[in-house]
Length: 77
Image (cartoon, rainbow, N blue to C red; front, side, top):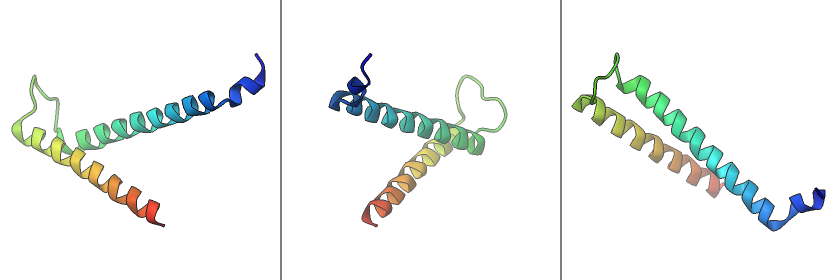
């Protein structure tokens, strides 16, 4: 394989997309872990309790909103 093939616009786009996927995957794992630890006590049954479901939803929403706020602040700098 010719190494110049690795520096094509298509390869750069592919690499960028893969980096974005990795960031999304890492973020989902972090939200899942943090919100689970905060909201779920013990071993859940077949369903989350209404309190757990509400807590998980609110936790994930706050995480997204906080990250969006930080991202906007960083972009404005």
